[in-house]
Image (tube, rainbow, N blue to C red; front, side, top):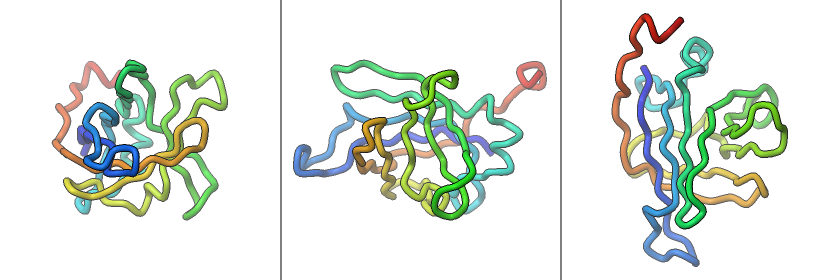
Length: 134
C-alpha cells in the first residue's frame, strides 16, 4: 500500500532541536511492518514521488528508485533528474529501516554528506484510480 511519509531533520550539532524546515515528503509502498516494499514499488513506481524541502534553497521534486547493488543487494535512492546521472541521493540501508513515526532514517545528499531525519508522519496515500494507472 502506498503511504505518504514526512521526514524532518533530526537533532544534530548544527540543529540541536532538529528542524522542520529541512526534510522530505515521500510517497512509497510500505509493507505491514513499515519497510519499503520492492515488489509493490515495481508495480507503482510512477507514483513513488519525493519532494525535498531545504529551508531557503526551495524544493526539489524527484522519484524514489530502487537500483541493484549496494548493501543488502540493492539501494533505494532519490533521483531528481532521471536523464542526468550524479544528482541522486542515496538512502542509508533503507531496505532495513522501518518507516514509522519516531524512527530515524539517514539520507546522503548528492555531495555524499549524510543527514539523519526523524519520521514525523506516515499516512496511507490516496488510492490510485484505474484511469490514472494507464
